[in-house]
Image 1 (cartoon, rainbow, N blue to C red):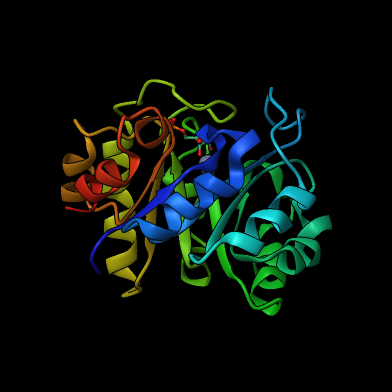
Image 2: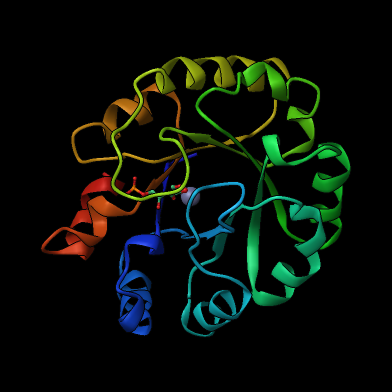
Length: 215
Ligand code: DX5
Ligand code: ZN
């Protein structure tokens, strides 16, 4: 699988969201990464369902929705109706992760599970066969523009071994601190979806930056 790029709209200009979505539409990006934060699971509040719906109206790429909220199982149908194609929940936020994953899939979405920097890959051992995407947090979730945590490379290795053991095609997504300097190393390590917020939106030419990240 050639790697995919998911610009994170957390770093977009929220007063010009339509413009920034159109930029992503015309770029080589594969997904639009949408970070939902509740101020409880993470120490920040970002956006909710009405904004996801508004993004969907303009988006020509699938919405990769990353829920950084407690009790995500309560909102699965709502996010489906708002336009999510991939719905990612945090392993740390789900008591009944297996049930939640199946509810996401029954709602016609791809199911993703995110793990915080301190959560071992082994926590996914019993459900790896059931999920479409693992979102490896390479920063502590909550904010854009943070420094990449180097231990992420070890987690990618472990995930690669785990997925080949089960002979499954797993999306290994890296979220946080992806830059022009480290994206190639991440792909070589086995990552196949790269989220990029700050790197894309703080660059002079976001379309060109996405093109570089795709190479
Ligand atoms: C962090 C979010 C990320 C964030 C990444 O909690 O999950 O998706 O937007 O931003 P950058 O690429 O700026 O680290
Ligand atoms: Zn994210």
